[in-house]
Length: 104
Image 1: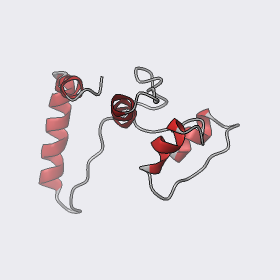
Image 2: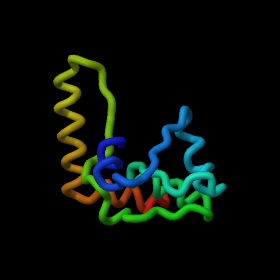
Image 3: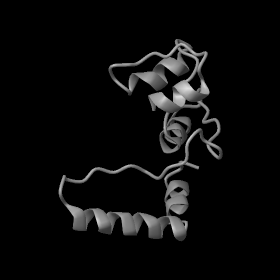
Image 4: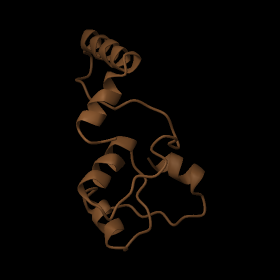
């Protein structure tokens, strides 16, 4: 997330946290001004902590799907996962899941 942050918030002082779970706590406590993160994560923290608000959730700095990890060299699995993710996006299943899990 560092590159988009540098590109869009080039006058900001950037801090890196050892533990990513400490960042939303620091925002809620007023120790830092903002947390730049993926949209689903921002929506999650907004849902569980009323001191936090997701901003630009409809117009993020960058557009991308959820990320996922698979073992190296598993091309067939990669193709299958990519196909399923594309289908989910085409059918708006990803949005339905986010709504169902209070992320929207």
